[in-house]
Image 1 (cartoon, helix red, strand yellow):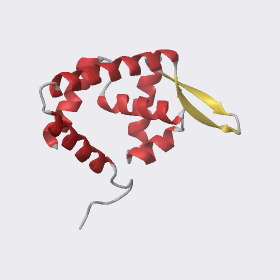
Image 2 (image 1 turned 180 degrees about the horizontal axis):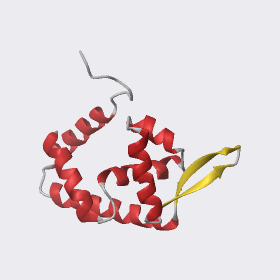
Image 3 (image 1 turned 90 degrees about the vertical axis):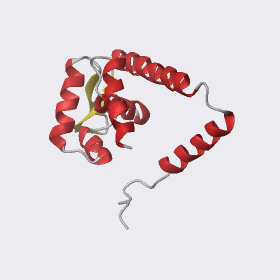
Image 4 (image 1 turned 180 degrees about the vertical axis):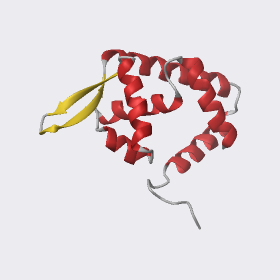
Length: 133
């Protein structure tokens, strides 16, 4: 798992110089949710608010994320992808898919099916589960 995480971090910079693995993950979450508050990102990813704040500020400076007032509560700012953010996220996602296809191209069908089943099982772990004991 450590090697997998190390590879993922290294590949993020190669796919887009402005996008760290954390940034890519945050953009993906914003796209999936249709926007959310920075505090929601911090809670979801169990990150410190200051870490999320720095990441969001960098994404804003790069023109990939913008803040909008929540229509139901004008005291709250909601983060949304900009058009540029959507484009870059799509480019990075396609680059990752291409890399996965290349890496798995010579795997036998039965190995791919088994690997997919293991990933589904791994990803089904309940959010917030401790994994302890």
